Length: 262
Length: 248
Image (spheres, rainbow over the protein chains, first blue to last red):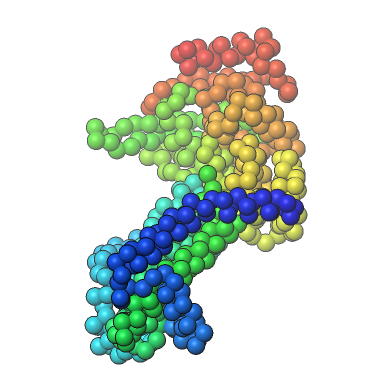
């Protein structure tokens, strides 16, 4: 691709972002105006939030909190993937497994991960294991459900073609079933990671001594630093956006593009 | 026709259970196809053509009657007879080359990639070996499907309205292409279609089916050399005879 064409494409993308940026700018302006108008002593202006965040970034604590939260999400989510994808494929393929396990998972799925917090503390204490467990619990079910549904919705014509060519079960699974389900697995990963990020912040608010959730609660408790509370919230939002963007990059893989085009 | 039949279908019957009771779909179908013969089966839509094809290719079991391939009872689908259907089944997650190599899972195929590329060239897809399905047109996809079938050297090709999803021009083009390819490698072909002209253009023998429950109600031999001209008086007469047999 020529540099000029790339430049034009980049320009068009930036142009598409303009309306969203304008709305954000308007919201920030409104917030600022509201704080000044009401002469609030506690609620910070946008600028105070920025300086507060910079302060934390400079002394390094912000990065520690972000790192701690990402580590917990990463570990819990990875464990959930290792369990959910094989289990989902198995449940989708073997109807006996589906009939046996699906009711249990359907019952566990609607329980908010927050409800597991007391049990997590009872079982794992207040270290890193509790939030990792909660993230695992929150992201494993959506990924199981998506993977299973993916197997169930494989188009019959592909399975028929595979049967026609007389391939072995191993080849059928590796070359047909898994790639056919992969787009659904990626959707499951997006949902799972989204929930995981929601939950880590909630879990960190309960106990522990690090993480973005802890940072928010600690800022409030230690002297009503609402500038840091809001800074924490915005950072959580931005990181959530980046995580989702990262999983969306998977949708660009050549082998799954077929599901998203048209 | 050769003395020993490639496909021997004897008194096949098949029905489906509905709310109103058993619905007979295929009602005593008997047909013998010789090695290397091109037989077309023409019938009104909904007459049970696809059910018949499923039975002959091994995907469904008949209620009664038998299907013999080379004298042996058919046990199920296999690479000996490849189905090319209307909807297409080119794997969208594999490239053209990978699709063509899909069926080459045993040993003794030599250089699989080279074989795949050879057949891609045969169907006119040279240069597209690395493309994915969503990057190809409908006609190109059909070629991939045909090439994928040919590469495993099947003895029989089962074609279930193979070109009906294509536009009229591409449909005409693919008929000629298919005949050209069959010229090089003589397969036994069973074509199911509702397009009478398609059948006249390609087949050695045309069987006309009755409405459901279906059975053969007329047989026509097409004694015309290729390439055939559909506008010739002989072809026109044949067309009229077949349409009359179909009740039109």
